[in-house]
Image (cartoon, rainbow, N blue to C red; front, side, top):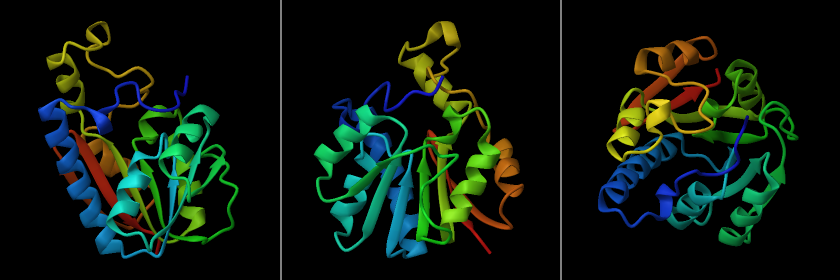
Length: 197
């Protein structure tokens, strides 16, 4: 079952460890976005819009749109980002033309869907340059949940996660779809900037 939005709102957490991890995540994300240098970004699976809000606060000149399959989380995203266009749609059928965006972002989305391969192909279809994908860095993400005493009966697996990629498994997944990929890790997350051509 796909879940819309965050089970644990790490973006607004007051826990100092969580806040530190999120700063590191955003620092890694920012470095890849800066490297891509996009003018137009599509955030697919944008959830409540926290990543869009962060990117817009860094660079208000960016043109960013968001897509998510959950109306509920899009309502929150619109509250956080009233001047951003949001569309309710599936990652498997993005209602955008081919090559519409410089950068297509899917942050913490692929672990929630049963078949990531057609989703990645759809991300590629709407991007003319690059795709940026982030997923939890396993097994560390699950270990962190166990340390927090969360999801113990699931061995730390967050509800809604149907994939748990280690670094080699994530690289193998991306290697099926992209010829050139830059992958970095930020403690609990893996981030990959992938070239379309």
